Image (cartoon, rainbow, N blue to C red; front, side, top):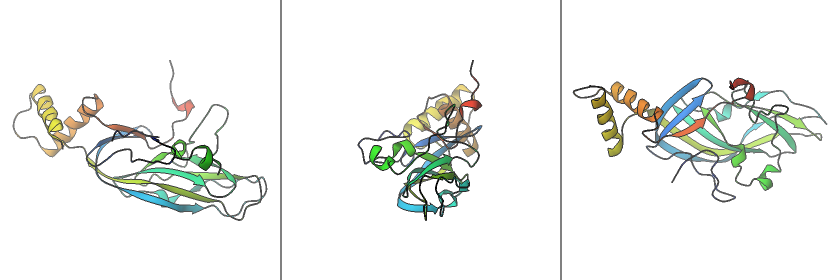
Amino acid sequence: MEGYPFKSINSLDMEPVASMYHNITIHYIRQTIYRKVIFTEPIAPFQCIDLGALGVGATGALTNIPNLEMYDGELGQWRWYPLDNAQVRLYLPSTGSKQDLKNIQPPIDPTIVSTNPSLNMTEFFVWQDNRPAVQAIAGLALNAVRIIAKGYRFMTLALYPHTWEEKQMVKRLASEKGMTGKLTLSQEKDLMEELVAERRVASVDVWASALGGSSVTRA
């Protein structure tokens, strides 16, 4: 299995972005966090929040979704859709606009289930307790605005060499740096991070926060 974000082999599939003992590089705001997956499990579709009633044409308050928070050291991979007839904007974390275009932030509505059955266009990642938030817009009077989410949870540890190839790469880099003797766990972690950062060891890159166009410096 080759993991990468937004993967959709056919119209109904959702695959985990990484598997057991894969390396993962998590980009969160201005941080780059290198981890190794040690356990993963699927989370079946569930109602993660009900934003409550909305009047005709009303825009709801920006509301956090604590049910999509993860434990320390865990990453969540989520896809979602509104169950009720509302347009919903996503923020990650609550101050960061997802799908941020120059003149609009396109919302998601219930038609996404038919226009994008795999829901891969709704995919986002949550690192630890950095919860997402949503804001609903109602075209009709609604008694509820329920959000359905599904996905995968990943338990992770700091990077360490697991495969034979990774162990050989770490030994080689240590030798290049003149490091002798048995390496400490901290040294192995640092060497693995350098190998991943230089793309000498494979890792899956994911963004666990929004990246607005205005936040990018362009030449």
